[in-house]
Amino acid sequence: MSAQVVTSELRRWIVSQAAAGHSPEAVLDAMKASGWEEAVALEALETTMRDHLLQLNGGGEAAHEPAKPVPGRHLSAATPQISAGDRDVKVLMSLNQPRIVVFGNLLSADECEEIIALARARLSRSETVETRTGASEVNEARTSEGMFFQPAEFPVCARLEARIAALLGWPLENGEGLQVLRYRPGAEYKPHYDYFDPAEPGTPTILERGGQRVGSLVCYLNTPAEGGATVFPDAGLDVAPVQGNAVFFSYDRPHPSTRSLHGGAPVIAGEKWVATKWMREGRFE
Image (cartoon, rainbow, N blue to C red; front, side, top):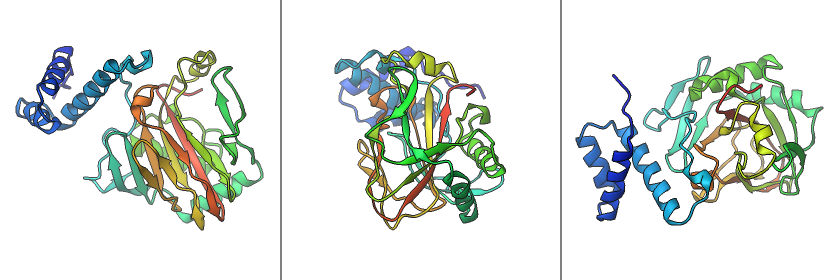
């Protein structure tokens, strides 16, 4: 079966239907009745109306960039368990806009403890990528300690990376190396975006290594005694950090319209350990 192509004519029709007062549900039903696959119709409806509203509100140039392919488009809570190669992973929750999926049983307790042990001796104050220069530097918004593994640096890393690639349907070589973070009591990461801001002068240099980030996966390596949720302010969603679980979110363009703003709430008691995997649009080298 050939892929259905969302044309400019279809987008204009969607906007005209909305302007005429038809509900999104009615527009979606009309598209399905005309032969459009539900997943294609839903994405066309969401992206068209989002871009239209941004245009009406004077959105920046990045808002009008074509949507990029993203990992995990096939995932749905309608399929509550998925094979990720060597392990079955549970889909605990799924949102379409913003695109957020919560997984259960992504890692075993032994794998979590092994990653923590390998990372512990290499921790230092966490840095963020500074898009003005393309370099990394300490940022007061991020008060954790962290380190990076090279891709497949240890067997447990290679196993998890292959599992993530299978789960999200994204090329293994398009993933950055795992970053492990430790948050002590009071430590947090204030809400931010993971994509690289196109308006910053250092971004072209960063994009030479695989292009834009298009997806993020945060794996919980332990369960803190209190606090430390991953928060999505635009969605009104807090994801509890539970050992072995993970939260995935994607962003099809580098713009706030993706509603991918997220952060790590302060840890109140105990420590929080996470392993983060970022996916690029191309091969990361």
